[in-house]
Length: 315
Ligand code: PMP
Image 1 (cartoon, rainbow, N blue to C red):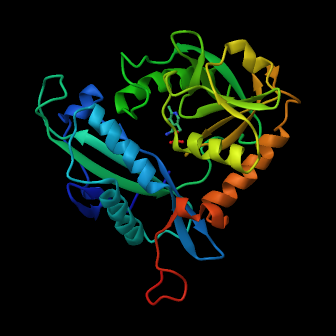
Image 2: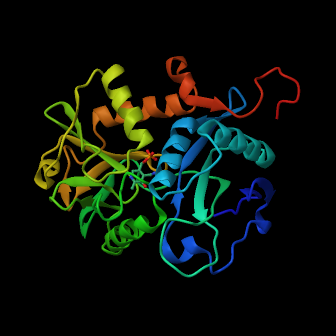
């Protein structure tokens, strides 16, 4: 994976090689950081880089930071402005992935959230697919359980919490599966290691509620809107039993990284026909058109990084 050329670090954009922290850094030891994952889509026809829902991503980022008692002078629009400066310096003409990170820079011993100094860093790299088999994943229900809200809140994108995801993902992949689906403490589906879950059952789209220890995904919200308003499907947020997914007509994972990945099999059981379902297929096509800025109705979700075509100084 290519390294970034630049980073936003300690309040300014610097060469990536200068964005370094000491080994005593609090967050490195205690997992007391939060992060984000945002995508930029290159639209060749318009020669434009569109960042998908940056304000919504930075709102969740700042909310996650708030859970860890981090206070910043930046608003979500300040962070979007800084991000766009960084992307212009990187001068991407390709799809990219953006990673904001908030961390405690203190080089001290002592686990806590208060009386510490939070910092924000942002980097971006060119990026393609997150999983290999987006049109037909074979996944497994993990033996690891999802962290509970009263342990580490899953609705915050907290660095330390990703150890839970890493356990699930590694065991799934070492057993030959592409991804893991994790149950919460009550045995209901919560989410994938880095994705939200949807299934289609009896023609209704069903996804776990935000109270089932899931990250409140921006893609999940986007898909709920597209399913309801464009595909005219009923969408229900409710707890999902493990065996319901074995009986689903279709199922898919969604997230900024994975985008929309069809699930072909779960635990060696075929979902529907065992191939990407019709609804998932239509939704994926629509989603890619939307994120690339090709659907005028949803253009407000896509923030252009470069000056408009025809404007002087366009990159
Ligand atoms: N759940 C988890 C655990 C994740 O890490 C992600 C990726 N950020 C998602 C869901 C999907 O969230 P989003 O659509 O906002 O990327």
